[in-house]
Image (tube, rainbow, N blue to C red):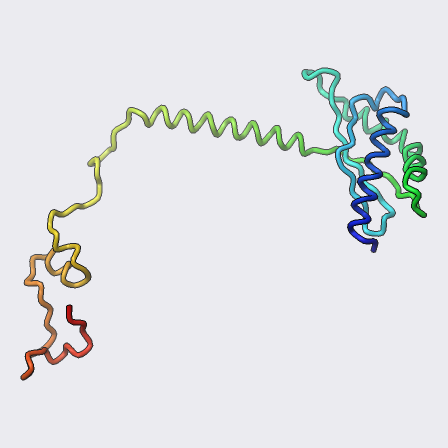
Length: 185
């Protein structure tokens, strides 16, 4: 397996050579609007996959994907010769072309995001004049300040109890028999 950095540099060089040849040297009408986007090289540097996109003649025209794929297949031999001459490697990689579908995915995601934004705007418009179904503040509130005292004392005060918790009888020092493990506040 070759060095990954060398494979990336060679893939970039191959994409530049092929893009230049398609634009300036090969005069096939099927290659008009073809743009090389990326290139990937196998680990042994024997196979190169070139990713391409096709643009229509105008923004409203649908690109001819089948015609571009056929034109790239026709020009594959010439392009491989140019890659071999331009890179100077011992073995010229075989070329395969794959249509890049990232731009289609981006367009689909943009449409989905636009629909989500429209749904959020509709929800905000409906929610603007709405009132709650129950009370405006559905949470229970108490006016007692004793509730914020803490664990057991706050609960006992909220229930209306005396506020003192005892678990046993008083001993001679004034403590309950079961108060050994309880905290004194």
